[in-house]
Length: 129
Length: 107
Image 1: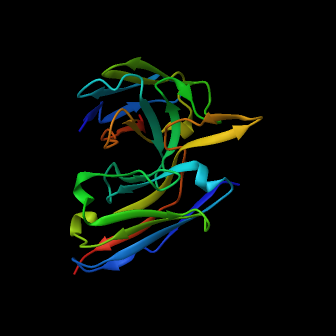
Image 2: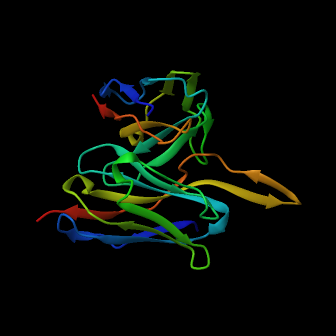
């Protein structure tokens, strides 16, 4: 069964740091791009960060550039989000989300859809004094 | 940044009726548009990708259309489990952005 399980959320003061983790199971992690998407309480969805399967290509939404760092450990089937200089507007439920993948079968490589096809249940970050 | 604007914000319909949800992009996203469904207290679920392709296990009553800047998600005959919030999202460029959502509620 494909599973994404986030952890590391909690209450943190403004200016503080947190590291989110996402443990992955049920698919070949290194073959898939991964993302973090957040949702503030009662609000819509906001894509936060993306990392390629190898970890070589990374993108961020402007509001977190220079403060957040996405990374992955393919040997541990884990995705991370290091969050520094946290602000009140970072308060949200943070989802670990699977993106496009590359699957090899019978000597051919195909890509899965470039969409957010599997979501974890999220971990809540509250930034408040 | 590409801005996606969904309409209406809220749609009130009865089970069995047809639902039509719209998503307009501030610039062309080609066919690079997806739709997600989110029920209260749950993570979003992928419904459609690349405008008109249903994701795994999505029933045929869901369909998508459009190209460029104007897109539609249609639900042919609403089932009780379809009442939820729907989001569109593009993959035409970075940053990926979502629409603000349309709440589909029971009339």
